[in-house]
Amino acid sequence: MTSNQRPTIKSPRGTRDLLPPETALWNFVEAAVRDVFRAYNFHEIRTPIFESTELFARGVGEETDIVTKEMFTWEDRGGLRGSHAGAQAVLGGEAKSLTLRPENTAGVVRAYIEHKLWDRGLNKLFYIGPQFRRERPQKGRYRQFYQIGAEVIGPATAGSQSPARDAEILELLATLLDRVGIANWTLELNSVGCPADRAKFNEALRQALAPVVNKMCVDCQRRAVTNPLRVFDCKVPEDQPIIKTLPTITQFLDEACRTHYDEVKTILDAVQIPYVENPRLMRGLDYYTSTAFEFTHGALGAQNAILGGGRYDGLSEALGGPAAPGIGFAIGEDRLVLSLADSGESVVRSFVRKPDAYIAPLGAGMNREAARVARELRRHDLVVDLGDESFRLKKSFEVADKMEARYILIVGENEVAADAFALKHLASGEQVTVPRPELAQRILRK
View 1: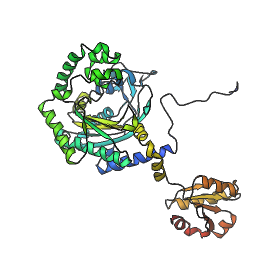
View 2: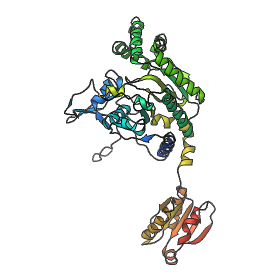
View 3: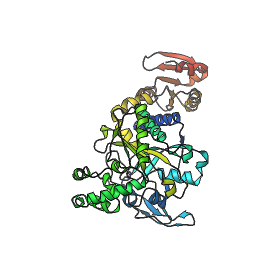
View 4: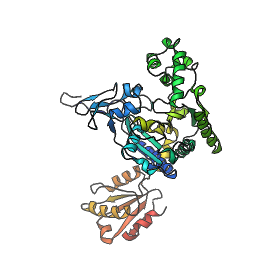
């Protein structure tokens, strides 16, 4: 770099640019997802990318790693900070502290409360968009990442508490993964019980951890005091043998939770959705109750979860709203696309439309004539790209070949005067002169 050359600016650590042709794979996934949601009568919701910090402290949980370590938080009139140690004050209904959303369920439930969506009965909502967490980047995990998620929420009288809703969500997800081409997924299933069940379980965990916690990582030592359930979130390999000896929530489920869980499994068996029961599966956020699940895929290595979710029957009340049982999930879109890496190239080829025609304007003043022809062709849903009147014909052919256009269309003074244009099929080499009114239909022929 010379002394007067300014340094280049790169994307922030933990973020990335999504570029063609990779974006075609993302578009394919999102189009397939929208089709599946439509089939299950879900409707899109869009919430702000930042919310009151208190929303996440109350909704996600004060002692979760997300709130204590990972949020991008700033005072409304101050500078950006890296994390949040607790709920911030709210004055006159306006948040003094704001946070880029680290997840979307709390924001959807906030919108449910704010807009009194219970008047609509059962709400089946989905979203696609970016989330933000200040954590160490790794394979498939970024500080700005993308989630596809859905929530089913409403009054219990609308059926929101039914195990049928849980099973429908799981069947939807199996359909979605199959639709985008992810094979050999595994559904892991558990029940995390009701708050009373977890209180008993927490006490049993404290007692079981007491003689061994000093052999575990620093985070687990802290979790054993603040919230023993968080120990199951630990990914430190040396801690896993100890975690395997701990009690499981299954031993503490009350009759209602056990019956609910059994009914979910009965419906899944009826619709032939395979699952593996994992009694140590605990979702990492405070709002989860009853059914909890993850879909995993071997292509992602040790961090193999594509998506996760569960039931959150008390979240609305925790955020100041009415009782509104709900269940939802979030798919890490980055990891979903990563799991498609092996088939991604063929997906891109099938999803991306190459140009039907490349228009080559020849000579001064022909750019405007080429633009007129292009506009007419695009009205017939043809993909059309334009050259420039400064290009020699040889260069136009080279560009058309490179972009894999089916036809090249010559627009010169003679063609404009005759209102008929030279059209060449690049694969066969066949060239014909076609009157302007017939161009679209000729190109539409396969």
